Structures are given as structure tokens and as C-alpha cells.
Image 1 (cartoon, rainbow, N blue to C red):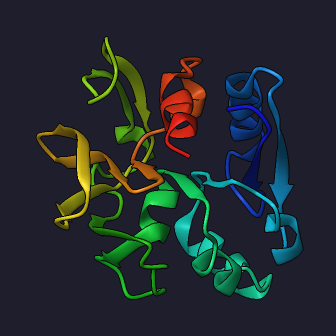
Image 2: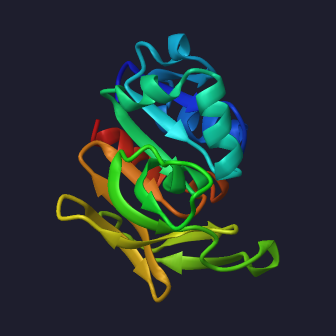
Length: 189
């Protein structure tokens, strides 16, 4: 993990929580920067795309000129909740075109409204004990392509995947205080 530079997309959503979690996971062996432009993304080894409102984040990505920069980015992407929707190959919505970075088909708001949000202990491939997860108006992946490793599923669908350097989660690990998924992602860079 030494010397890693992690960018956090800072357009909307739980940006500060991701900055804190990655800063703690790096344990002083790198830096975390907020990304608001293509110039901010330059030199980053990874980009975290936080949860928030996916339609709003997609619009802000386009308005800030970041779409092409993200599409051509060679580092790893750590996408949570709305980030899952944004990086998917396809989504169940026509309000915006997802980035198509990870070969998954995503169903937005798979659990219903905000009041239907919940927490659970989830078995995740690569972790030695269950991970306490927070689902907030979360999506799920209905399908994953052949190059995608499914890390966790629940009855409603796939909630964690890895494809190459990318890790995509439908929940909010940055809210748990548990840094194992951040560290697992960093180890794969």
C-alpha cells in the first residue's frame, strides 16, 4: 500500500466518509485527495465513487468533464451504492447511461424507499469473518458477466463484486468502521 494516491469523487454523496476510511486504511502510507476535475484524477492509483444520488452524480460527472477521464482511467475503482449504478454495464433506468466499466446489470433501489434501509452481517469472499453492512436505498446486481467475481450475494441479488482492479459494493462499508474491504481493494491495486 506504500505511496498509493486514492482519489474520492467529490461531487455529491458521502465523500468525507470515504476520505476518512481510505485515509485510515492507508495508515499514513499514501494520500487521499478529493476529485472534482480531470486534473484532480491525474496521478491517482484508484478512484472511490461514493454513494449518493446516482442521477445527480451522473449529471455532475458530465458537467465537470470527468466522464472521459473516468472512462480512460487505468487505476482501480472502488464504487459503493450509487457508485455501483454508475459503473455498471447496464441499469434498469433510462435517465442516464452508466459508465459501463464493470460487467454487471444493476437494479436501482432494489429494496424500496429510504425507510426500507437496513443493516446485516454479510459473508464476503476474501474476508475471514462476516462484514457488518449498511444498505441505504441500495441497488443490487441482477447479473454479472463471466469476468466478474461475485464476492457476496443476498436473496435479492448480488451485492459485492470484483473485476480486475475494481471492487463494487451495493452497501456502505465506509459507515461500518471496518476497513477490511478498503484494505482488500488496496491490496489488489
